[in-house]
Image 1 (cartoon, one colour):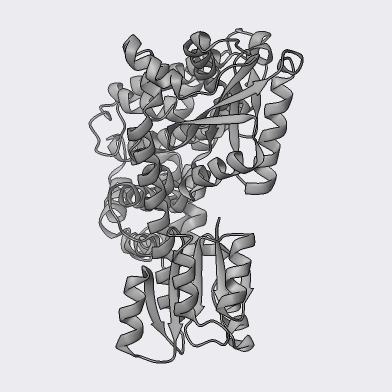
Image 2: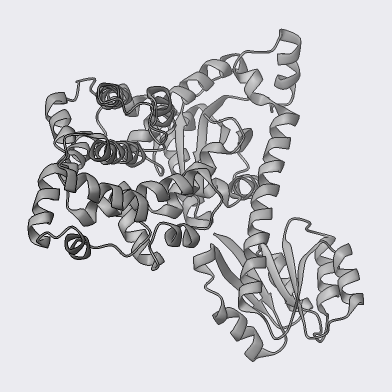
Length: 512
């Protein structure tokens, strides 16, 4: 969560700024409130912030003077000016100080919220660009993967501190939310200030290679040291990480092998999750025993359109059957089996060419990019839901009246539809019509309507830049909170989380 400082000499305006914005809802947290530029500079020295909202006219040191002094020390933080005077001179000076925007009092809440969101997005982009520049400049991954000649390798080795006794090597990866809010920059600063015995190497926007320089006596406690370091990062920075540790080495000649071990152990993140710290000993005793899957049972549930039963089965497979003691390859084998079962159903019922359906390659890519078991489960929940929804619409073995209802939904899903009105239209008893629909489609009319709306909403979330509120209205949900509930019931993930996952998956940068 990005941090904010509010600077305003009038106390009631300062408190008003604090209360008119739902800071948490837009991913921000107010950590400082100052009454003049001098006080603001002192607070910033103690704890820097990401975004500053400041008045211009203040005693002791005004807003422009404060920002000028700030820019001599910090160019990253975004600044927003508040003033009661619409004067060009303020705007002209503000431009030279790299100010985000210039807002007149009385403050427009929507305008301020919009500018705050914009500032947060610019910070994210700046951090990603900085990380990409670091990779371009240093390129340690090429060295670690053995893609350089001997002369080039020696240049990299010369950049590392000499090994006096032992070096413990570990790889630390940040969870996606931590990456998106600039966590890598915070983490590097924390290591520099708090861990003098540790040297980080930047690998990608979400991962570091850590060198811990230790004595022979302490080398055996490397796992404990890294675990305590991880706890400190979580407590002080609210960043969640996963650490994989190789054995200590006495020479950098062993470094590339240590890197391979760390990278291999990173696969266990999908089972252990962020917040875990593991080494080879931690996974040595894990079982390779297969997890049984009853493919016929799962297939029958899907073809009978038993969505609840099929999703319960998926839940049992990936949550209840998998323990931390299992080898990670068992989990991937299980996921592959389920993906093949679903793909066979799509091929058999000619669903593989449906526009929103994933092909097997796309599914496998998502499986291997899943962050944890819960992310893996969500992939299959969404896929099973899509298959059952399309089996409803593609099956031709429906009575004419049920097909008419389906056509009504396809054409008029945005409208306030209900079975009672449609039953009157087709001169049928509503209860009887509902029973026929349930029997032939495997779900109630309302569930079918919601599945259709949510399927179209999912398409819009993944393939357009429409706002979530606009998508809700587009598919016929005037109440956005109701749309969130129904969408999450359908796909196991909220609309906003689905869009965040899509954005994260399409961001540039190597991933380990």
